[in-house]
Amino acid sequence: MRQTATALLTVSILALSMFSACSPAPKPKVEAPPSAAFNSTPESAAPPLTTSVAPAPKLPEVQNAIKRVFKDAAVLHPNHNPNFFSGDFNGDASQDLVVILKPVKLDEMNRQFAPWMVRDPRSSLSPRARPAVKQDEALMAVIHGFGNNDWRDPEATQTFVLKNVVGNDMQVKTAKEFIEANTGRKLPRPQGDLIGETVDGTPGYLYYATSNYSWYDPKTFKGNDSTPGPFHRARMR
View 1 (tube, helix red, strand yellow):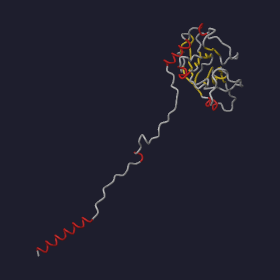
View 2 (cartoon, rainbow, N blue to C red; view 1 turned 30 degrees about the vertical axis):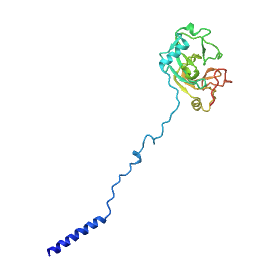
View 3 (cartoon, one colour; view 1 turned 60 degrees about the vertical axis):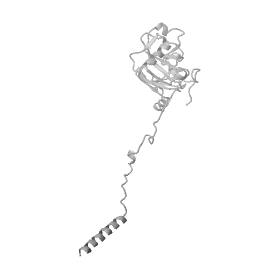
View 4 (tube, rainbow, N blue to C red; view 1 turned 90 degrees about the vertical axis):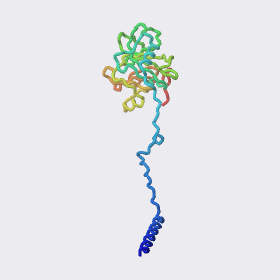
């Protein structure tokens, strides 16, 4: 009887072992792939957009440009903000520098053969008239760019000194912005960027055309631009 029980137990153990051996092994667990929100890499990200932007003027280089053109005849005006900025105002694809000046030596500023042209864009006199610079008045000087270094170039000396156009809220405007802001009005043909501002309570724009700077008043402009002058041909747009 005891032998029979032992035999049955042995048979049961063998049968259980054979069943376990024939059963398939459990599959290893596989970790789920990370979601797309955590699978971005610098390589898969869109590359940043790059544009060629002219570097903004810095005070030391602005002071150098004033010294190069005017020597000691004028200095940067301390009572205006901003008192310098840049843009391509004569449309030759070279950056120009605008500075607000305070005259220091009137005899130098008014000498006959000075290397700059004094103009009054808001005067009713001839556009070529050379008005006198007065004591303590604020002047706007535009130093035209030259060569690869634009207005920073040592040979960039062609300069217009403009009277009666230093106003408030001065901003550089592209020709496209100018046209969009004055839709439906009769417009001049600026060769480059413009300076939008308010002078003596009148909003308008200072612009370059026909080799001279002119003032555009939207309320009074009747059209007086002709063919471009000999200085700086307009860039193609």
